[in-house]
Amino acid sequence: MKLKKNRTNIRYNAWGKPVTKESIENTINEMKALRKNIAIDQSNIREMREQGRRF
Image 1 (cartoon, rainbow, N blue to C red):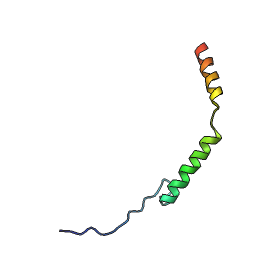
Image 2 (spheres, rainbow, N blue to C red):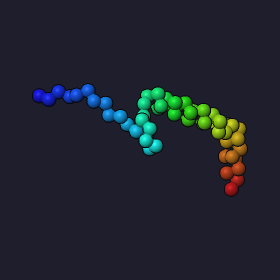
Image 3 (cartoon, one colour):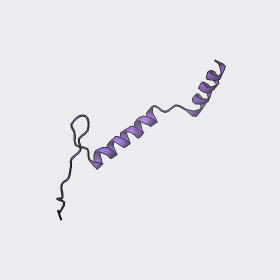
Image 4 (cartoon, rainbow, N blue to C red):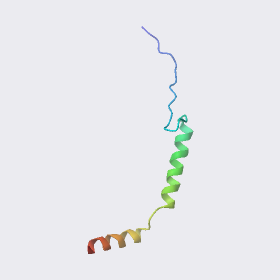
């Protein structure tokens, strides 16, 4: 019976930086902030739908 060693495999992102729980949380928070910055008002979405139906 073989014992598994306590090895941690470090994962890296596309830019070669290590992926950690903290980096994932930071990225998620940045994406949420970006989503708020570029959000479209619900009234504008309704107007776009109406214009789309006309064509």
